Length: 173
Image (cartoon, rainbow, N blue to C red; front, side):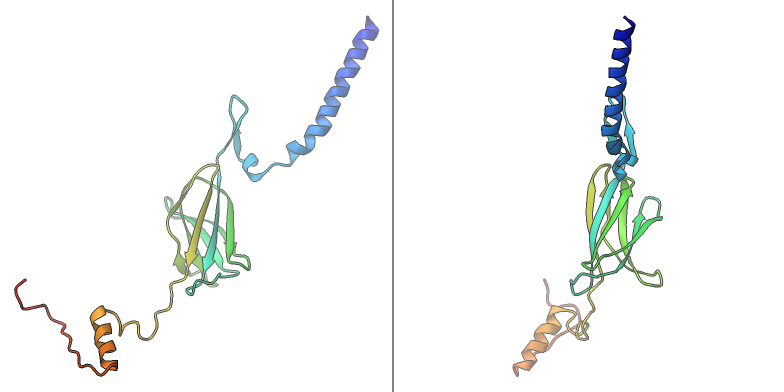
C-alpha cells in the first residue's frame, strides 16, 4: 500500500510540474489589458481600460510626421499622456481610462496648435480620432468673403458692370 501511495504522489507531482512549465510562460506574458483587468467570481477578466489611435494632419491634408500629440481628459481638464507621431502621422495611446477626451497637436514650445473632436473611450474598446491643423487662408480669402463680392468680381473680369450694396433692402418684403 505504501508503494501505491508513493507512486500516486509521484505521478501527481509530475503532472503538476508539467502543468506549471507549460502554463508559466503564458502567465508571465501579460498584455497591457491583462495587467489592468479585474478578476470576477467567475474568473473571467474584465478589461477596465481602452486604447486611442489616430492621425495628425497638416492643413493641406497631408500626414504630419513626428507631430507632438497630447491626450487631454475633458472631464478633469488634465493632460493624461503624450506621444509623437510616426512618419505617417499615426499615433497611439494605450491604457486609457474610460472617459471623454480630446487630442491636441502641440508645438515644440508646448503651445496648442490644434484640438481634435471630442470622443469617448470605453473599457475594452479602441477609439479612433484625428487632429488637423487649420488650413491657411489665402490672401484673397477676405476679398471673396461673401457671395455678392465674388459675383461682382467675376462680372468685372468679363467686362460687365456690376454694383453691390452693403445696406438692407428698402423694398417691402
